[in-house]
Image 1 (spheres, rainbow, N blue to C red):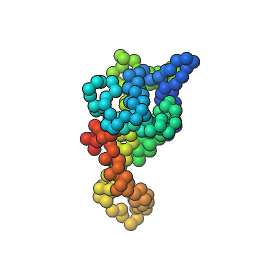
Image 2: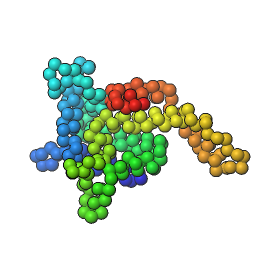
Image 3: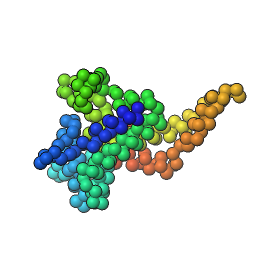
Image 4: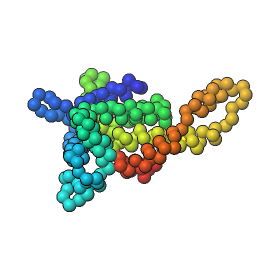
Length: 225
């Protein structure tokens, strides 16, 4: 499952925005409009505007978009990190965090549910043996969450792993003690509980930081939690 997630992350983010000859290309057709807006916001933040800035694409309006990830990439630009490399590494690191968070929350089943939720259109790979977005066709209404949202909606790069870590933390904190006590002879259950006890919940300051910063990245996740 880790190999599948790594293939998805490398394919989706290493070619997120790339130079082909004298052309600047975007790998995913779902990202044509979104990435242009995000680059505009990154450049706007990096220019030194006063926080919270005006909307760079609508006049006489404050920016109401939760642009925390774009602010983060703007800080990377101010550290003289190339914009494209910053976008790529941000996506790869967020993918690593998302894999860990899904695995901690629901194991391999949770990771598979995130990767393989787009129906059976992807099985066309075994016919063409080409890594393509087989769900990018407008006639297919059932889109992959990973390709159509995680790659395009940059706030989810923070919201999904942070939200899942908070859910895992609250489950371990409030429900782990409610597990039935194992019998003396049930060594397998005792070993499992011992392993679970070693997975300490997040420190309080980490819990507060993740939740309090959520509106800056994805307000809907903040409300849902």
